[in-house]
Image 1 (cartoon, rainbow, N blue to C red):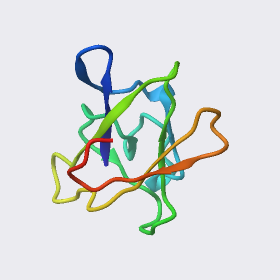
Image 2 (cartoon, rainbow, N blue to C red):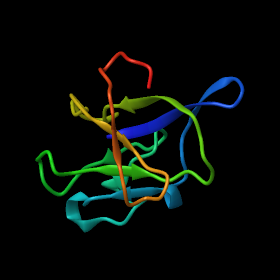
Image 3 (cartoon, rainbow, N blue to C red):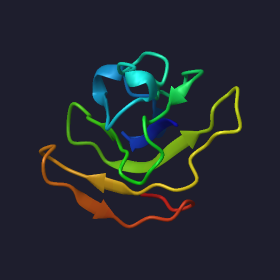
Length: 109
């Protein structure tokens, strides 16, 4: 999965967060963030691939300041027929307590 955030500040823009702002539950081959299967930026060729194919895998973004997020953009792999078919969004202001955000694939968050 390759993902970015739609932020509103003041004009909408897609933000492809830097790798120091990414965390993953796991990565295939135990790859580090930013390397091969641990590369989940929109501009990455590979994309993030979790070590396991189950609903317990997650990708987390940390932004440097409180930010209004208006959407999430995902892309499939550029070299294979692999893409995200569903996801859920949670938010947190402290990185410990997370809250579900109601969404559908075409909704604006």
